[in-house]
Length: 151
Image (tube, rainbow, N blue to C red; front, side):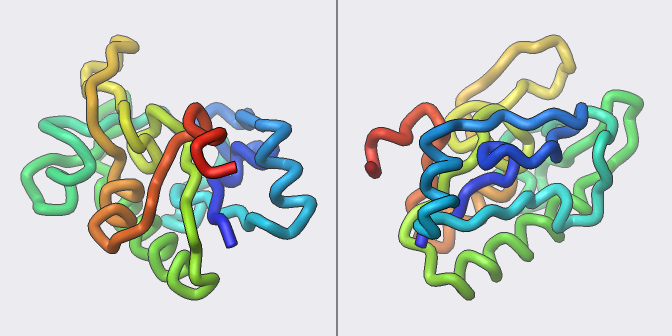
């Protein structure tokens, strides 16, 4: 079973209330080859919500306590992101996920790129906190841009 970001499956759960649907991912879900999860909703966020970025590093740094995740207005929301990451990992274990496809650039789900923490639209190489936790646990985590690598 493949675990995918809910927004990629067409659920309107992104910070701005939109989705980022991929027809290939919707097909995987429809064929019962994939299931969806949104780490941010699992962490307790609602939709829509204020944008957030990792300040001071990447998801790996958030996990080791040297970076945090804050909203554009400066609220520290690290704990909610950490809770969502932990619940997503538990779900991946529960379904025995063979791979995980997450939404690129997100402070939760980015697997190769995230925003740089300045809220300027600039990106850096790195993972979001959920992607980092799943990678540490040994899961293969890719973005929607790498979908053909596993199909």
